[in-house]
Image (cartoon, rainbow, N blue to C red):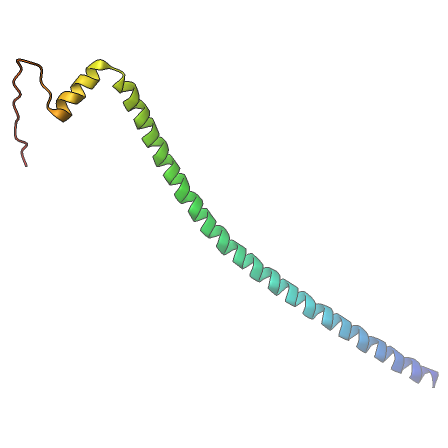
Length: 107
């Protein structure tokens, strides 16, 4: 009779252990699913941010090029000959006694 009680008790113990293991496995599957969804979401956000960084980098490069061009123009504007040349070209300035001839541009 003792053996019957021990067998019944061990079956109860095994049943409880199986239930705990099943519960733990279910919790682990739930956690792993949650972690995978979070990772998937973060990867999507990272892709969007990377595209924004690329776009801003391109704008920065263009701005640096414009800035360099403006710096060169400022240096050239300190030269009196360049200023005179620019005034003649843009404003059709002529010195006294000079005659300007305009040639039509071919289409």
